[in-house]
Length: 626
Image 1 (cartoon, one colour):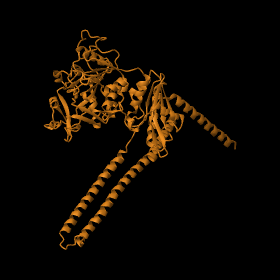
Image 2 (spheres, rainbow, N blue to C red; image 1 turned 30 degrees about the horizontal axis):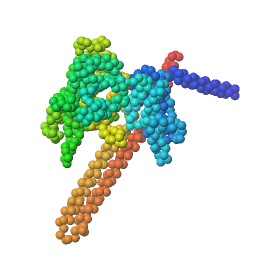
Image 3 (cartoon, rainbow, N blue to C red; image 1 turned 90 degrees about the vertical axis):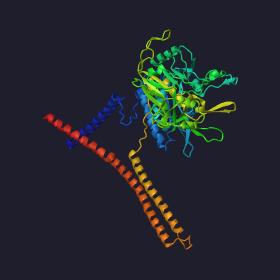
Image 4 (cartoon, rainbow, N blue to C red; image 1 turned 90 degrees about the horizontal axis):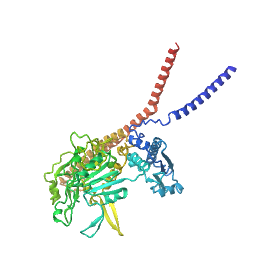
């Protein structure tokens, strides 16, 4: 009896000791292993890019992010709940990596609550869901200590691959709230000005209005000799007749890490040739522009004598009253398949329009990296500029047009190490030392082979409403330019962030089974339709050959033919059902195999490994005792 009581006490003490040991190990692991994370997902869904981590580790200003998500309104929306969980976990990773500079607060805006009033006041978008009139909020608000405020009105699951970039951009702008300065050199009349022809003020281009609203835009004269100090971005539009001193300034600006977005053109249709009252000046309308020796040093070729024609992307244009529209090979509407899907600036665009555009290409043996952002289709070929300059009928461009099968880069990003275009400092140039090669990681320049992409006619419609000009965009030209400006104005870390792989994991094996079944189903259905047509034709021939005059009554032979077809039809319908049944059976068998692997095989494998490890450890202990 005493022995049994003693064993009970020992067992209880052992359990108590194990419990204490478990709690101790839990506390130690949570302390010692704090911050250690393992992302075992195939596409690294929870692993932040190097650029994002650098942004979070170099924050100047503390940032607070408020994630608004309606828990109750989303209870019947598994897609949103899954995406919200993933977005929240990514934000938690942001918070963890920021070393205390970023705080995440989750807010559940219940109906008629102060939190819902806050969401509405911030301008977050509430989406009605369900028949009860519930409203779903799923947005993000960011603030800093100096009253900076940014928001994402609604986090759409369709935009999931851009979420890391959007979050990093918000954090970067809030933690570094200085105003961005953009310099603009333009050979076209993009800004508001007095129009001598109408004797009125002319509105500026919409793209100029957008840039002026978003940034501290500084106009630089075309014949200027120097660049303003502290430029964050330099934009060049139709850079014609730049002085040698300005070319040197741009060269040194780029080598020193300055960002440039340049729009060149083999035939700028908005170039009126200078003085509108001078007939000789108008003879030079539609001139070309290039950056010449700078392009050579950056490793880029650009032909100012030819444009890109494209049958696949050609836009339809009107040719006159009562005439049907025709496709114009020189006016292109580039769709999604012509955009770079891995670059944030172009990945989410649907349509960008170009007109009389040239193309860019990397030079042989160039040290720089060339990445196309927008490209033509493979159904494209070069056209001589003169064919467009003196074109009367767009159909004439089709004559002798032979696609080369190549894709031509209409816009490209140039990065990496380059050398100066000037072997020695330019005499009298105002620079702080001469740079012979690019600094740090190299240059970051975006080039366009077209200036007409910026013109209002290719992407916006203007309407006068009660004295106000309403602007509606029908293409993504403005969005592309704004994306590029935002990206270039960000840090090099922000520019390096690419679109993420989607968290949506399709059932590839199931989709393949469905494709096979659909193919068999379609073949069987087509066979049935063919037999039906043959039977109807046979019946028609037999009816027309009858001599008894009773055309509305089927004779015995026709009835037998019809019955044969009906029997065959029933047999084929049975085949169709069997195809569907086989598909369901294959999918169910695949599911059973996966369940067996997950429920039985994997645990069994773990048990076997554990037993083997325990047996091996016990034998090793026995050997050590002997």
